[in-house]
Each structure stands twice: as structure tokens, then as C-alpha cells.
Amino acid sequence: MQQFDLVVVGSGPAGRRGAIQAAKLGHKVLVIEQGKRVGGVSVHTGTIPSKTLRETALNLTGWRERGFYGRAYRVKEEISAEDLRRRLLITLDHEVEVLEHQFARNRVQLIRGKASFLAPDTLEVVKDDGEILHVNGKSIMLAVGTKPYRPASIPFDGKAILDSDELLEIEELPRSLAVIGAGVIGIEYATIFSALDAQVTVIDPKSTILDFIDREIVEDFTYQLRDRNMKLLLGTKAEKIEKLDSGKCSITLDNGRVVVTDMVLYAAGRMGATDTLNLAAAGLEADDRGRLKVNLETFQTAVPNIYAAGDVVGFPSLASTSMEQGRIAARVAVGAMAKEPQKYFPYGIYAVPEISTCGLTEEEVKERGIPYECGIARFRETSRGHIMGLDSGLLKLIFSLKTRRLLGVHIVGEGATELVHIGQAVLNLKGTVEYFVENTFNYPTLAEAYKIAGLDAWNRMGEIKAAVAK
Image (cartoon, rainbow, N blue to C red; front, side, top):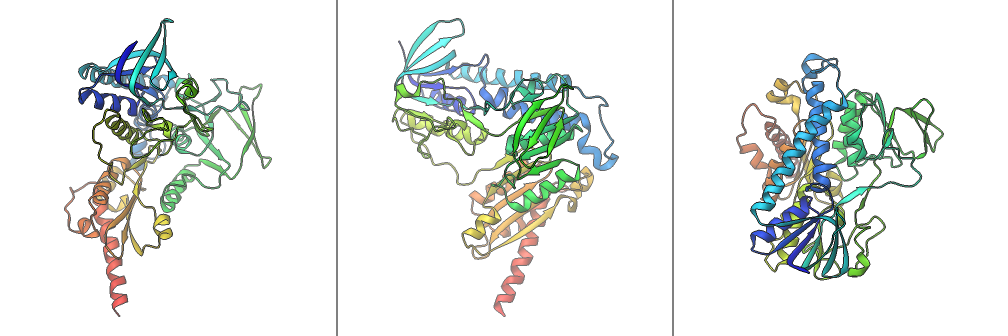
């Protein structure tokens, strides 16, 4: 039996970052990956593919230039699924090559096969060729990620009725698409296909979407979606999905309405990929969605030598936070000190338009009873916005009236996931409204919106102070 200081199951963001961290500290590390190539869900079916698809769609449709040349403007007149797939494969090859090189450079051993527990410190690995190996780890990290939730009532066929993994393999772009589930994945794909000029309908039993995002940002976002004729059927449930003889799909809603569409994407949640791990042999048990409970400071499970990180532990299920979780878990697992992560991390939604947020929402500030003021900037107010032809985009800053510190930054629009990091830095460094008022930003840039929003809040805060003084 092979012995390792740390055995990592899964090579996604949490697994690879944890494995490399432990190896850099001089420990013997093994990664077990059941896929044909390393990278996990993030590289092959999740983060990288969806963002590559988004970028390809925006480039080929000329989406970013339509503010100048009109909605009929296109870079490529006829866009096919093959056009999208070609760029995706190039991107994936690069990601896999970089990751394999990182493993080799840091002497991380890799086995391809399916792992399952025999004991809390022992795993059985069944390789693709049928060979069975037993490996022992002083510590074990589970970074197995998630897979699409596929209820038995949905007649998936991989062609017209699909989950988010299967969507990447379609052979022809649909003229109409119904997305069941208005979570992050559903909204991202819905808006991407809308940018490809498909008629998109989003269906969700909840009456609101993206509830963890500031409501003002969501309202601006949904206005933009409806403005381009996307249908948002919220507060209604899909009761029946069936394939029609014509090849189209029919969705019957609980209010009696029927939606007929070329393709259905079912994106109502994901499951932790823990069902094949034989958790019982390790003394572990997953919840009803296959997720594992951990100590959120050390990422230890109920079994002291077993750790879990990434999407398998639940919210926020971001590649960025998964990497940090994996790093912390690995350091704790091999007995190294691990600093507590920064309090505020950014959340990015790669829809069209992008949304990114960091810190408290206005709703959370109200719940905590914090006296506050907001500053707003619209991208069209910036010179860079005019140059880019932007007629939408919003940046919102929330400040404490008492301390003048930044409490939250919320952005919807072009480049939101890049711009948010300025606000994140100010949040973690406990900066105040004066930073934005007194700081110099490159001109012309979209980042100048921070100064506009800062001045907006500063003026309002001064008026409030003057009114209170009277």
C-alpha cells in the first residue's frame, strides 16, 4: 500500500490548490482524479467552459459594439455550435496543460481512477484499465465538486432536454430556449443564449432571482433582460416537460400556461459528487444534496483527518473561494499555520451583463440597523463608457454614516467582475468615502465610476451632516 502525507480526491480549484500548497511545504502528495483529464468540473464543464462560451458569443455577435452600430450588427452572420466549441477546446487544452505542468513541477503524484473509502485513512482506487490500488493518507481532502441535479421526473435526452453539462455538447444552436431554474448557472446560460439571439424563457418557482445580490442591482439587471425581450416567468413551477412529435419541447406550468421551445435546459441545482465515495466506511455522512459539513475555519469534517473543500461544502461555490478553502485545508492537514482569509471576497456572476458584488447589500445594512448612505454611478456618465458605447451599467457604493467606511460595492454591467476588486481592497483595508473622492483614477476608464459614486455619496453625507447640525 502506498503511503502519502496528503491524498486529495479531485483536481478542481480546491483540490489542485490544496495539493500544490502541501507539496510546496515539502510533503508527499497524491491527487486522484476520475476524469480523463485533470481540472475537475471547473475546467471541463463549469467555470472555464461557461465563461469561454460567454466570451465567444459576445465576440462573434458583436454584442459590445451594438451600442454604436445597432442591434442588427454582427461580426459573424451565421454562428454555429462548432464556432463556440472550437474556441472552448483551445481554452481547455491550455488550462489542462498549465495544471499538469504545475503538478509535475511541484512533484504532485497523479492517479486517474475512481476513489472510495475502505477506512478513514485508506482509499481504494479503481483505474480505467481495471487495476485496483490501495492508498493510505495521513490526511485526506475531498474536493470532488458537484454534478447537475437530475430528478427522475425530467425526461433528459441529451439533445433537446439537457442539464448544464450536456449543454456544452449541443450540435446546433436553438432558436428558442427555456431555462428551468433562475440560479447563477441558469441565469448565466439564459443570458448567453439571449446574446446569441435565441428567444429565451426563464422559469422558476420563486418570485425573485439572485436573492443574495443587492436588490437595486437585480432590478437594474432584470430590466435589461426584459428590455431585450427575455421572458421571466417567476413564481411559477414547471410541472411537466415532454418532447413533441415536431421535435420541440412542451413545458406545462402549474398555472396552466404552456411554453413550447426548441430546447430545455434544466438548471435547478447541483449535487455534491459524493455518492460513489463509500462515505460510511470513513464514518462520514452527506446531506440530502450530497454535501459535506465542515468546520469553516479549518475545513475539517467530523472525522479529524478528513477535510473537504470547494463546491462539495456548499455556498458560495465559487472557483476563487474553493481555491482558498483548498489552500487552508491543506495547510491545516499537514500541520502548517493557516491565516484566516480576508473577510470580504467578491462574488461574480458571468451573465450578460456581468454582476459582481462584495460586502454588505443594502438589505443587510438595514437589517443590522446601520445608518448609511449610498453613492451611485452609471457607466454612461464616464467618458470610457461613451467611448465603448455603453448605455447601461451601474456601480453602487454603500457607506456607514458613523464611520464613513465602505460597507459594500455592487456592480452590474461591462467589466463588473474586474472592477469589483477596487472596492474589495478598500473594504478589506477599512477605507472610507474619502478614498474615492481624493484618489486619482486613470482617465478615461470605467473605474472612474468609483470616483463618481464616491462623490455622490460624499455630497449626500455632507447634506445629512449639515441637516443634523441644524
